Image 1: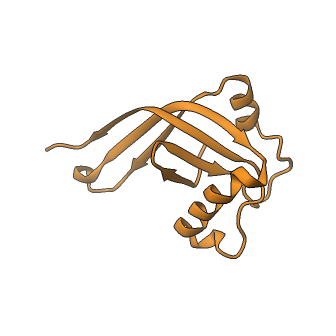
Image 2: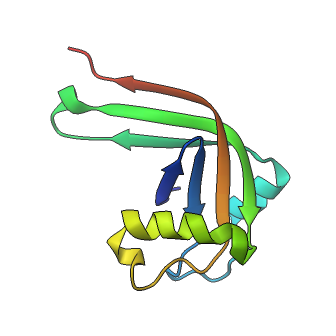
Length: 108
């Protein structure tokens, strides 16, 4: 599932934002509650295959709804994504403590 995210030291954050959803009881949140061991994959695709790469973060996720916890991650997301400047995410924050990184890049 595509997400917007911000990275702070060893914690990756993403939020449930205001885009249309029928509920905020989303499968991704239910899955995290059931099994907080998660992975996030970031990739770069290009028609120029010499520039392809991906990176994966594996770790433990928590769902934050407390406004005191949400503040810093929301600001990080607002700084990274102009779309959030006027309308920051209002839903829960997922905070993923990264325990392992892996990746690949084309080497010609």
